[in-house]
Image 1 (cartoon, rainbow, N blue to C red):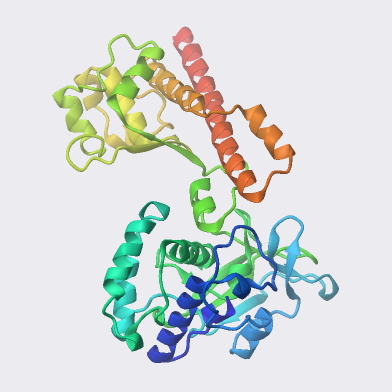
Image 2: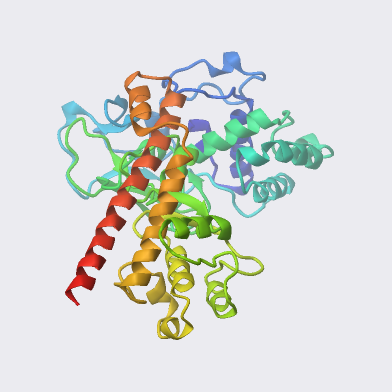
Length: 426
């Protein structure tokens, strides 16, 4: 990681550091478990490491012109794992203290092409829009593009690039990368050793030149002795955290279950909810005109919808359910899409339509739960047995999706009961 950050002040040295970083990642063996700070990955590699074993990270940052608060250490924290923590002997760190500062030349990211090798890297990076699914195809594309590239312009220093090394490199880079202000990901040495929390005790400050910004970490709250320094990686579902960072957050309020907006599935769910003649598979023309701006009908429709997260029910899905079940264009025409998409709007098309729409979501949740091949108690038993890390992550990911669906079922069931109470008092 130290080598990954050693981008020089000039485009040439920045490119050289990027080449060294990428080649180092590609030449390392696939990491299957968490490794300690000092390891012998080079011994297991098919090719020798271009960069030697990285030096002490804190000293490296300081030597390269950065700042590290004297109370910080990289340790294996009992709760957060390997990361940056406050040392016990140094006392508490008050709010506002700068914890880490990196000069603009140290963060590493793809910049505007400054040479032939940079241009090739940018072309390859543009094609990486998925992970494992496209690794084999991507390997073929890489070999095709690099087949005639001269050694001096070769972005991987002439090393062979295969799907295994690409997969490891993509994983290694994504787990260290930060996305700030919607920009492309960048590698921030030492800062990337701070662990995640939705209630962090520190934040990243970006200052200076847009192309080469200075980065610092500032304490948001008092950081007690032995406490981990935490940053908020973003409000994402567990899919993102698992794929990009390799962990799963329990009781993640931003977690979601993704479903396909499928007419046959929705007809079955609405029938299970008591809707007598659902027509999700064949909506009327006026319903199509509403589904189209929701991107749920017509050419280019985006049929991925979600359950869970802050919205509880994807607004696009909720609006579609209300519109199709209502089957009354006059009742629907008096409401805009924003109203139809909001669960906060209390039964905009009437309590009967609302109850049927929510019961349809309950049926979708039930269908989703039935597709898991294990039950919650079985998953909990597996986790109690202290399985291997990869198994633990997979089972925990699966378990959190099931618990999320149960939470949604309970939430919507309460809403349906309230609708029944409101109807009975009218």
